[in-house]
Length: 550
Image 1 (tube, rainbow, N blue to C red):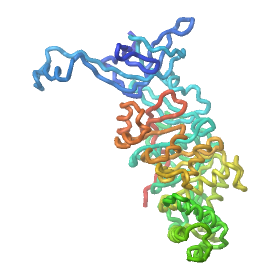
Image 2: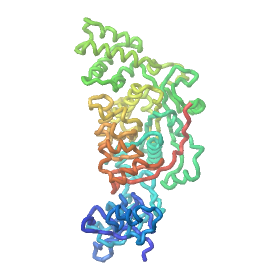
Image 3: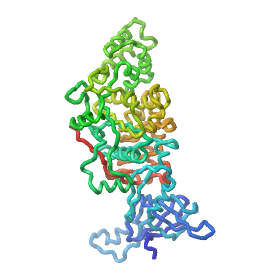
Image 4: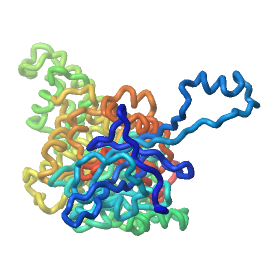
């Protein structure tokens, strides 16, 4: 008897095997679950007459009996007597439905009835998933099978970071810390494997979660360290990290609004890692179109006004606001073809939204550590990590800073930034949570920030600029942004979102159910080189320190 055997293929008149699907009954002592991968003996396709083997991934499980109906089962228990013992036990078995992934002799014939089904070993699983052919593998987690095998899973860098494909999206409900944790795990993988080629820019949008990623996690257990080893990685925090904080005129808090622990901030300052970003009048007025990205502006009048602003001569924000005043006065004729009501709306928004310490002139006081976004990006080299804290800012200022960063990097990649060499940054990965805020599904492609993101996702892979985005609900993100992602990650999601979002409609029913109850640390992966549509993986606990919000 084959000790690895777990069942046999079953083909019936109503449910035949096909080139892409197979069913098999499972031995009564075997425990199996969806996402397990099995090996099936198949016909020979070569002259040596050696049998081939087909690999398949389990998608669903059914238990059937010889009972004609549920009512028959009820009657057999003495019409519903819970204590009754049936005179004859029902014949029953578990039937597994599986998707065919691969045949080791490239045979695409349907598997025959009665073929023996075995557990796939580690090497067979790698072959079945297409992991053998990876040129530059990036660790992406590991899978645990029902028979106790643990297999490291990897992405192909050419499809994750370009040029063959690029961009990644992670969707899932908040509260499990899974989306951000996985993105940080993957970027740590990239830094460990490709530190001489990739630069990373990370936006902190939740408390102080990502404001100490160069510090080791003191609470990491041996078991959690072992999970990193399973993926072929060292449980070490990020290296070569610089932090940018929003400037605020607060000497008691390091001249920043950030919620980072003051002792950690002081340590970063001593090491020359912490700077405060700001917007002087010269830089800020060129970026003001981004300041109104969240405004409903169907005729793009706010953007049209913003295009006029660099022509205004002013040496401070106060002087700039005074220069806007004649534009809103009736009969002045200084507003051009733009309606007076639009200028007045613009003035109100400008005064409100630039009434913030972020809008100031550069200080000569060294302790304020002023730096422009452009200056911070200019300093980056492959292997560097730049963390930009935008969590304390209101949404409209978050859009400004995020847009400024991606515009500057994209312009540098195009060669439009005079003092930044296009190749000096290497491949740039930008990670942003709450992607629906920057490229919402409801927005049109004329919105400044949405247009910028569309350009990056549609053209960035050839330039070496990659977007890693995350959000709670995929249904809230612009379709073209999602459509250009070669890698998609699905975390735990509500049943309402699964029913509403069209991206989940093609999932097998068992996968739809699984995605609504994924435990912490588990995700479904979809990657261009995988031979299966979805793969369930585990990933390690973060190995960097996560400060608590003050």
